[in-house]
Amino acid sequence: MIDKLIENIKKTNAPIVVGLDPMMKFVPEHIRQAAFREYGETLEGAAEAIWQYNKGIVDAVYDLIPAVKPQIAMYEQFGIPGMIAFKKTVDYCKEKGLVVIGDVKRGDIGSTSEAYAVAHLGKVQVGSKAYGAFDEDFATVNPYLGSDGVKPFLKVCKEEKKGIFVLVKTSNPSSGELQDRLVDGKPIYELVGEQVAAWGEECMGSGSYSYVGAVVGATYPEQGRIMRKVMPKAFILVPGYGAQGGKGADLVHFFNEDGLGAIVNSSRGIIAAYQQEQYAHFGEQGYADAARAAVVAMREDIAEALNNR
Image 1: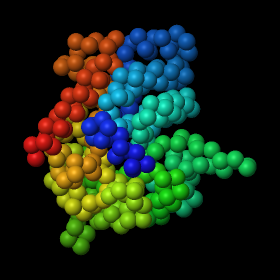
Image 2: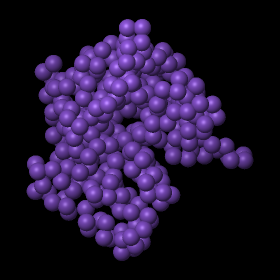
Image 3: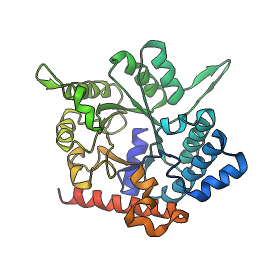
Image 4: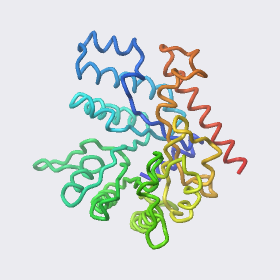
């Protein structure tokens, strides 16, 4: 699947992933009211609203981007109906030719981690048949329970030719409380990055990159420079662009000399662009057009930064 991600990036010339992280405050009034008329002010009504909202955004941007990243918590909050909306979103994006990164941040031990890996990337056996449950192309994985929590994902990646992005240095302000602690003179995030590189040697695509990627926040560009050297064959998923403060100039060190090696995420900066002053002229009815304009601006910002490095 890393090969398809690279192919999509080259085709769109946009190392961008749109985070499909819907919140009801982002969903335009006309979409909410239509869903509530059909299902009432219920969990089903909320799930229908976020599904229709997602669909509008995907229809507007799928030709510009290589991938999407739905954050599962935004769907789980609406219970079973929300999870149905998550699955519908995953399936629709794949129909549009997009790579789907399930932002699920799973990581446990033993049979629990095996079940998570099967649920999101593999196939579950039901009698004589096997089914892909959520069937994303990549999943985000929390490595801080150790290799017991990651190896089941590696096994499924090998079987299904899918991938993972391992949390290494996250974009949130308090990440340093643990991730920056020194062990034997190195910060913990660097030690995790070394382990990602080792895991990646077991799961190489057909080219220079592994199925095992890493998450390193755009808000920490200097750490991005370090981790690019530590993990030369890992694709880096870079959250924190836009709403969290990251910008194109911060990102150049996340990329390799071939212009590949990183994919940059923006979530509310795109899906809620119509609520920003610079895109307010689109209005609520034009929320999807505003999202498209935000993708174009992001693509230009990153391209300019890479051309000037």
